[in-house]
Image 1: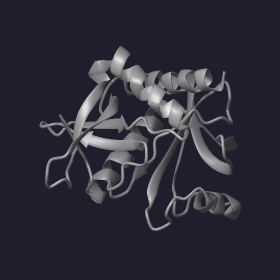
Image 2: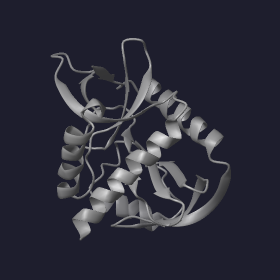
Image 3: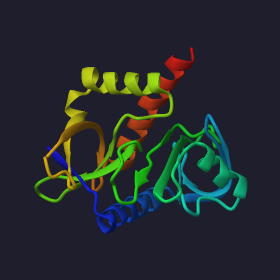
Length: 200
């Protein structure tokens, strides 16, 4: 069982480690406009290679465009709860986000998809709850992992849980893994396939 990391400094360290790993593997950079199903984000710094792009920010200071900040607010994200926003997409479509792995800075609310966790040997992992914007897509994604990749549908427990309440999440990748980027791409493609089926 993995333990969800909820201490803000540990989450920050994991987020910085993930960014450093991605910077080392994605050798190109630009500023671009990217699109989700509900909003457009302008002039955001992006790193990429010929397969994948990655953009990230802090929701309290997410983007230079004030309208985008208002969009976040209108979507019901509490401004007092700062999240690390992590967007991933395929390089053949440089504007479309495939999946967001957003992580609350104090790890106290699992409504956001992203989680960092650790095992008994203090190895760190990136997880996703399976929660995506469309509820049908979210259930399909969770079901797919339960049936097809049960080893990646893992039990988790929160550091903050006094009663050791457990849950489940998708193990996307160990953070310090040689195949880190490949694992991210595999997860991203599975999310894209689920969304495509939902749109058809």
